[in-house]
Length: 331
Image (cartoon, rainbow, N blue to C red; front, side):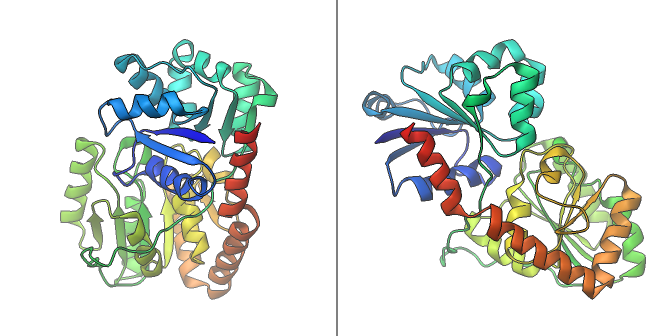
């Protein structure tokens, strides 16, 4: 079977590229898999040759793809599957339903990460229930390239890690007020933001905060293979996003038995059962108390770590995810 897989990003380390690399790793062992990062490469003859040979297309992030296809006059002339994460569903479809809905309705199958995302498509947009499939994300962290420069990570305790692209929807400085209070209780506090610069204004705010607080550190994007070092370094992993599809960083953290504390949104709540395998917060007050509880109470720390790890083993294995996609491909 020949499949052309369209992803917006591959080189830049962000959610879509993580998903693309994971699916490439699993699916390329079972089908002829040609990956095209449409926001990073120009349209070229090789792409059209592969599209001609392919039995089907697989598209990641429908709103970006529609915009790119319109601009480059690329048409879908074979059956196709769409995988939709968070932003395209939670923002783009709401903002411009007429532009994006036709592509979804004509798809042979739509894969979403959560049951809530499926209900949204079926109930709010009238997409056929039979065409929408819930396939939770899994974990894939490749081996680190030994030629890469070793990461220079700060020391301290507690070490709080927030992996996210720097852009408004990730709201990475939401935690600031809580952490200022926490730094009074824990004088060795260390807060590390890691992510690609996706918004200049937001990055400027991060850099100003980094200059002001000696416990706040910003690290630009790192290779996917280096994320293992970051999860091993951190004591707790945070997510402050206003909205999420299903954040792979939280899943990765749980796979390393690190407690996760995340803002209460649909994507985060699809992974975290509050008080069992992680903690959810809505306010800065709740975030402050959540972090303090996790790092002050060994029993809570261990419970969240163990149950988080169990969640990954039961629901988010790469074999289960790839087998689910292969079923869709065969259909």
